[in-house]
Each structure stands twice: as structure tokens, then as C-alpha cells.
Image 1 (cartoon, rainbow, N blue to C red):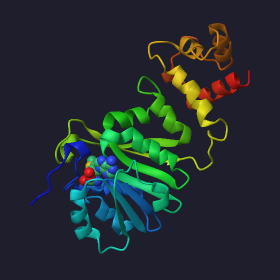
Image 2 (spheres, rainbow, N blue to C red):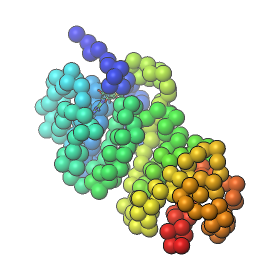
Image 3 (cartoon, rainbow, N blue to C red):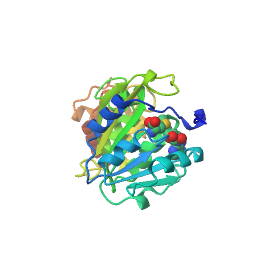
Length: 264
Ligand code: SAM
């Protein structure tokens, strides 16, 4: 009996998509030293290729109906480690050594929690290569303009994001409503922004700056308790116009802004 896909688990598989799978392998550059985490292996379309290249592949899958299928296909392979459970409950740090990579076609209904969870494990994970909704990849990887949001800055603070390629919805089984994109995030090993400013302070200013999309930066930052004149004086030091909007500020400008405000 063939497998019945479950909508509640975001099951859109890359069944018989050799070209897309080969492209995923090519851009993620998996090598024989790599330890891989695959979130949501499904029926194992990508898993087989990962097992061919990597030193170890740990798969985390929630759907117990897929366990038999996966164990039958790869259970004999000593590089294969299957963990059944919800990725958001699993202690990823316990499953891997250092310098692991995530390579996965993730379930889209929990995209942000998964990205956040991987960021939280960045001491052991150096890079992530994930399939997400095209629109999410565009937002995360936006250099400037309207698509930038708190999510963009949240990723930029920890690493470098790159939009790798688009995959039309017709490539998935069953076909989802939206197109997808494959993207990467490589964590900064030198902690270039984390070493300058704490997470707490950084997000305080980023969240305030984006708090009302229709308002300019002066009005939004004033919600932190500064007078508008104080904010104007601070952003003038950074050559930022008072009509500017948060989406047009670079991460460097945000860090400098927070440094000035905190040292006042
Ligand atoms: N990698 C497979 C492929 O490309 O054909 C399947 C990808 S499908 C988009 C997402 C997979 O994540 C499904 O196998 C689904 O059962 C699994 N999944 C959904 N929610 C999950 C969760 N909370 N924890 C772990 N796996 C989950």
C-alpha cells in the first residue's frame, strides 16, 4: 500500500525529483567528513543521497507511519541514525558532535521555530541548507527594501543567508499552493555581531524600529522612551534621515544605533 501524505505535517515530498535532489547536494557541498541533520526525511528521497556522501546522517521525523519505510530503506546503513519525534522537542545538541550541517526539506508550518532552534544550536551546527517557501527565503535573504523584517535581521545577526535556487511547486508531491526556494545560512564563526552587542540589546532596537511598519524610524524608536529630538540627534550621527524606515537600515547601522543609545 502506498503512503498517504498528511497535510497536518506539511508533507510535500520530492519524490522522483533526481535533478532537484542533485542540485541540493551540489550547493550544500556535503563531504565525507560531514555530520548531517535532516529534519523531516519523509520517505527518504534526500536521505539516500546524503548517506552516500556524508559521515553520518541523523534524521528527525515525527510521522510514525514513515518509520518502517525509512528503516527498511536505510536501516542497514551504519551511517543512518533515525530519531522519531517532534524536531521542536528533540535535544539536537545531544545527537551530534561539533561542526554539523543541517540539510533538509523542512515542514513549512514550523519554518520560524525550526530556524530559531538551529540558531540556538549554532555552537554545534555551522551551516544550514533548507527548503522553505519562496517568499520566506526572499524575506530572510533581502539586502534592502520592503521585504526586510525582524526575521531578516534575526538571521543576519548570527550568520550569512543566501538564496540559492527556486523550485516551482509542481516538483512536489502532492503539489503545494506556493513555490519554494532552497537557501543557506552560514553562522559567523567569529561571532562578529554577537561579540559587539548582546542579543537582548540588539533585538530591543530592531523590534522597536519595526514595531509599526507605517511609521518612520524616529516615531518607532521613540516608543523605547526617548524623546523624538533625542532619536533625531542619534540617527543624525549615523547619517540616517529622520524619514527613513527600519527596512532600509543595514545591520551595521542597527548595531551602531544600539551602541550609541546604550552608551548615552
Ligand atoms: N524530505 C522529504 C522530501 O523532500 O521528500 C520530506 C519533506 S516534507 C516537506 C516535511 C517532512 O517533515 C515530512 O516527512 C513530515 O512528516 C516531517 N515533519 C513534519 N512536522 C515535523 C516535526 N514537528 N518534527 C519532525 N518532522 C516533522
